Image (tube, rainbow, N blue to C red; front, side):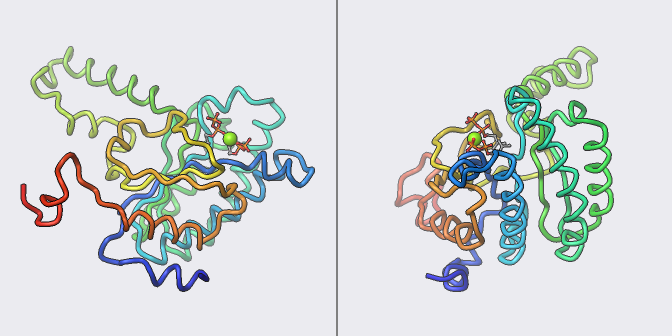
Length: 253
Ligand code: IPE
Ligand code: IPE
Ligand code: MG
């Protein structure tokens, strides 16, 4: 099936609003070609471009991309530095494209841990694209879900201590509203590439009912076609949310 067929298969009435992707496999992709890991990261930028375009084309509203985890700081300094430079050049080179495609850029994670030039470039593109009304592209950079949850617990505790809220006000909605993702709906679909079956500290609260899609494709090989295939696969699933099939079909509560 070609990309157009794959795209035409998608039911526009049943799109996930929010898709999150763990972009994995750059290092192995480079190694297979006898190259350094950073070569894989560089080639992964093209896949980001494709997926952003594909998501926009079919009308996905939110796309979160896991680009760098807090744990990734433990990688060799050379790789970390190369990744930081790559973030800067990618952000600079993609600004025009994002504007053309009406994409609004956002970021989550421990952004203050990023080098200041990365922070500056990121803030700049977030600012430039802030009035765009198409796809919202959320980059997870220096992101840790457990840290996000821990910070949220601290912030909510402070609100209680300061008498801004009472313990009884704490419910699931309030917790969601205090996370870094507060302005985005939870992802209905989470994709991970490269044949790894784990979450690696990504959006733990937010994916409690997400559909998970794993593919062996390494990130630099991931194309629009693969993205459309994942959306189609999602649409074949029955999301029961604890109920039974008969209830979900008739929409009875
Ligand atoms: C994902 O690819 C990109 C980042 C984590 C920054 P990897 O670099 O993890 O590639 P593999 O998993 O080693 O192949
Ligand atoms: C997860 O990939 C983080 C990103 C894709 C940015 P990793 O390659 O770092 O995950 P682990 O360490 O293999 O679980
Ligand atoms: Mg990896």
